[in-house]
Length: 274
Image (cartoon, rainbow, N blue to C red; front, side, top):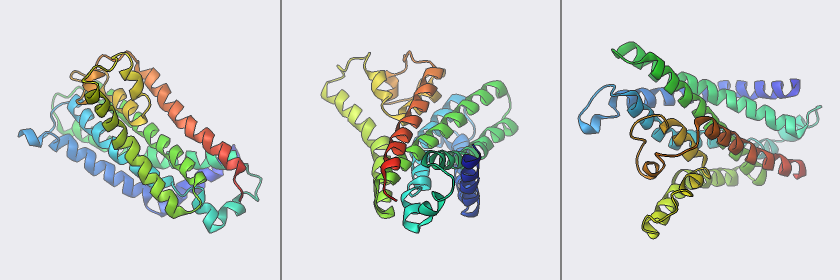
């Protein structure tokens, strides 16, 4: 555990030194506060509208920006260390590859967790301070669920970034693979589902559809933040409005998505020649 702690501490210090935490926090804070107050500007409404509308808007934003930031944060975690020669140096210490990987995951998780809490939490604080007659209990619960699921989503894509990093032979290739992965998860998957719905003229088995959404962590994240509110989203998520999965089950699916690429990464990492 001590080795994992030191690696996590190193990654957190690197995040502070490279201004990652400050940059990510500012991005999240500016976007979340802006969406909270100007999200309904297109319909002629300025200011906070409602908690569901705010969470829907933030979730739609987060599925684009959090995976991209997470992949950029960690795509060179292994291949970059290997190119710089520091990976071989680290492994000369009494440190296993599993401990190194878990330490990096903990460090990057702290960076994302702190940034998400401060960034998106600032929107909740702003709403609580400057909005009259808002339900503070509902606001706290909705934002706590959102922040926790957003942090988990970030960790999932950090784990995917590690898988990319252990496969790639160069940082430039890892960067390209990271961008392709972001496109596939954020855009291509849902577009493919829409294409299937159009191609089958909406005759896709309604009992199968919710399980297809579980194949993409960004869709699980959106489902977590749509369940429990009236008017559950739009597009594909209208069809999932009566989904029978509970929030704990969806969180378990996020944890499964976190573990799957991490286990594959460790398996390949142990066989990688340094």
